[in-house]
Image (cartoon, rainbow, N blue to C red):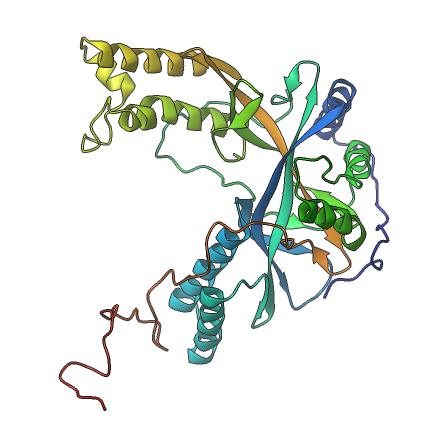
Length: 371
């Protein structure tokens, strides 16, 4: 299904010069960043699911965002995707049976490459990293997309990360994109803190998947610790989306997590509404501090925020997918799963009807005797 150079041989890149004025400014912004950011801080792998149709060619479409923490989470997301297709979109019983057979495999096996009908699915592995320089981890760039009017509504729908993303190793790239891809082709783990199996898999990937594709920039909330920075959110599609998640954490999630707002309270209650209503005591003071911090966050394109003597940063992060003759890299043998495969959804019959869950130990049927 994948076409291109053989193992250990990198693909040629098609480089195009930006002619659109906006793209030219983005390219100049990337060149400025490259001069200031000389190192790469690798966080570790993320996983998602990509699909390739029967037309062949090298392109794969992301169908489950490459943001998950272990391969099994990605397999579970594929399980759900196929189950809902069987329930809602199957054209006939034969297609539904094929989808449900794939679901059954995913419930019992660690399947990373699966063909269903005319579509091939693969669990995809990406390396998450951030550029660093004298000032620390890279923050959002001036040319990164921002909404003209920021929407801070917690319940509103916004674009999801990797929505509609197509991975195409032969798509033309700009000079700065080509330079970054070339610089990262040799990226691999090193150092005593990594187990031997992890180091061996990383070195092997340089030969089996010699090319790299760079996914669009993402934005992550990070917390300053005594030893560095740690992420406190997953990747977001924009810097504003990351700020909005921090605003939600300050005003809604933490107050409930720390017992400042009872869990059974009205969902619209948050640090802002309760502070505006007045109150006294240590709990009211803490809520007021959270509300004030969130107000500072909303004052502009704020990328650094101090709360209770802790500094939070909106970091610009990247994800790198290694690519070989057969397409994107899947999980490595040394990648760790957080849990085993298992059943996620109820059963379906051949007409797409959800079957009731049977009681534990239920046999041939109520009132029947078995030998």
